[in-house]
Every structure is written in C-alpha cells, then in structure tokens.
View 1 (tube, one colour):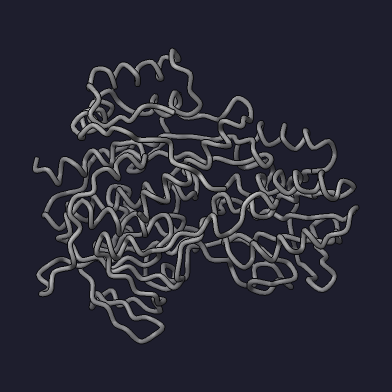
View 2 (cartoon, chains in turn green, orange):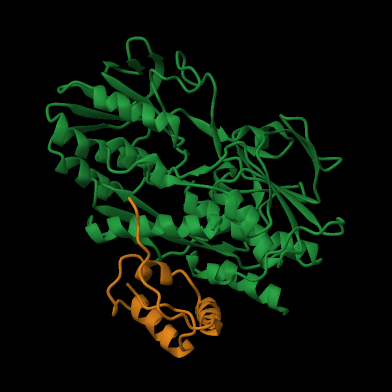
Length: 426
Length: 65
C-alpha cells in the first residue's frame, strides 16, 4: 500500500476529527496541461467542500478539482437556531472559501449548474460556462418542494422557513423580536425525512429561552406532521416540559394550507392563527440532482451505491449529503455529509488508480442540539457497511444520546462546529 | 481538554480507547462512538495518530460565539 492509499484508508476509518487536518501535505496549483484527472464538485456545503478539500489533500494536488457554488461564502445551518434566540449571530457562523482555493488549489467557480450532460461529461452553468469532467460529484443539499403547501410561496417572507441559514434566519429573528408579549409562535414540521432531524425541536427550545425572559406570557406551538419527536425524543420531551407550558407539542398535525396574509395554518383537524409562523416545507434533493437522469427513491432522493456514493447505475457520477436517499438510521446532517465527502474522495481517488473502493467503509455521526442558550445534548451513531444488504447500518450497542443536558455539551457543540468547519474549509 | 494525540504511543492510545469503551474513563460521546469500531479499525486509527509528529504548545482554540 503506498502512502496515499494508506492515508486514505485511515481517513475513512478515523473519527471525523479535525486532527486529520494535521495532514497538510503539499497543495499545489492545478497542473497547466490537463493530463490530471478532473473532478467537478457541485455545491460547497458540508459534503461538497469536504470532498473538494480531501481530494486535493489525499491526491497531493495531482487531481484537479473544480468547485461550483452559487453562494460567496459558507453559512452554517448547525448552530443557526441560536441566532433566532439572540444567542449568536450569522457572522459567527460564516466562513469564506479562500483557503480551499489559496491553500489547497481548488478551482472555485461562483456560479450555478443548470444542466448536466452525462453523455459528454460536461456541466453547463447559469453564466454560460461549460465545464468538462472525468468524474462529477453532486452535493446540492435539499430543496423545498414547490407548491407542496397551498398558499405558501417560495421563500415567503410572511411565513419564513429559516431552514437555510442566512436572510431567512434574520427575518424570523426580527419577527420574533417584534412579537408582542402573549403572542403565539407556531412551528410546523414536515413528515420525515427532512434536513436536520433535531433542528425543529431545538428551535422551539432556544426560542423558548428567549421568550421566557422577554415575552413571558407568549406560547410556542410545535405542530409536527410526524407521530412523535424525530430525534432525541426523551431529551426534547423533558426540555419541553421544563419550559412549564410555554411549549406545547402536537404530533400528527398535518398541514393542508396556509394563509400568509393572516398568518393562519389550516391543519387537518384545526385552524391556527399565530403572530409568528415558521413553516418548514417538505423537502427533496437539490434541483441539480433531480433534473438529471439519476435513479430516485420516492421521486425525491437519489439512490446511491454505498461503497462509492455513485448514483446507482451511473458510474462516475457521485451524489452525497442530504440529497442522498439515506441508509437506515442515517440522518441528513452536516456531520454525515462530511463523512460522505471523505468516503467519496477515497472512492474517486481509488477509481483514478484503477482500484475498487474500500469494501468496509465506516461512517459516524454526532448531532448536538441546544435546549437553551447554553445547555447541549447529543445523539451519536456509527454506521458499518453491511455487505449482505449493500448499505451501511448502525452498529447495535454503539452510539446513543446524552443522559441529561449539560453546559459541557453546549461547549462541545461549539467545538464540534469549529472543528468541522476547519475540517472542510481551512 | 485532552492532550494532543499526535505522536503518542500506540499502546497508550489503545488503552485510552479501551477505557472509554469499558466505561472507565468519563465521557459524553467517546464511550458511545468507540463501541462502533472493530479492534482492527481502532488499531488503524491509533497507528495513524502515533505516526504523526508530536505537537507541543497547543492550547484550546478560542471559540467565538
């Protein structure tokens, strides 16, 4: 095994820690004449940025990497609920992409991929570029299903989703600040699967911490289309109780339509008017993955080969992160997307060397959540590839949740964020 | 905060992991995560850390909120 292979094998086995970043070997400028194999990565979130950085690192700069992302900078969705409570701000969650290009030699393109030509192995962009690839990796995250909720417009400012950190987060924060004491804040949660399973419940808790200090007569209605809390149920149920009536949780709340003018929700068995309404719309894979002829599950997510993260039956086209039809027990999380990025990087470099992917990949996940401004909780899992089922499965007896919220885990949540941002972007 | 792992002795690192796994070392997530890996995988992980140049003078990163 040469050094490159050795390092890669370890990478896929190792904990997702930033310690691997110690491995900083020689990033070089992309070669002038293109004998170098070229990977085009679409999307620079937790999955795509990790993939781009690790391709350059593990190939010691011998693979050319183009990274197409429409946004000028990365803004973390994890921790963005704290902004809603007034306990952090978006600037603390923003990172630029400069190190990927300057330190690692990733060719960054601020643009949006409009079409993929699988036969000619090219992508076309909104600004008219055509980029050839040897291998393509799509990490477009999720998109909202237009028209899924009658009455709700895309990025409706009267009923913000605040499910992509940025302007919508600030908008919802502003509406919560403007809410009168005694007002009702309603959150609607779509049927699973959706991005960040603990996120809606964390949001209720963090906003409750704000309201109990500043609008103590107010109320939060958590309207869940699901039959139960989707992540860390016992911990969140206890956290809801600790707010002593401020939070009311209603499972099986199916949303039929909204009236944004009156901030009114039409549920299957009820109608609710609230002063601030946050509807998290149903989601699917990002558009660029669904527009192409890749195999889908439920029409919404892309089916992958779990050894390489190639779309099933479409060699050379990898899909990772939230856009993937998840394996059992696998959340749509930033941490998991980071793990997908490393698995795909190793498989792509093996393929360029004419080698099969690692037959025993391991993935792991940790999702931290806040139950107020300072106390954190976690859920963790480890996923080993099961050759008989052809997909990773959670290891029985491994993983688990916190026993109770703690300030130590609130601090660990911040450390996790800083470490994983460094692991993908620094 | 734990001391840096780079350059530490393999058997020492394996002992720390075993202590996490068996509940002898206080933990929040490490005890849960470590149980998901095979002994061979843990061996690969500690071998990699042990092979890194030792780092001195590291301090806990300041975390801005």
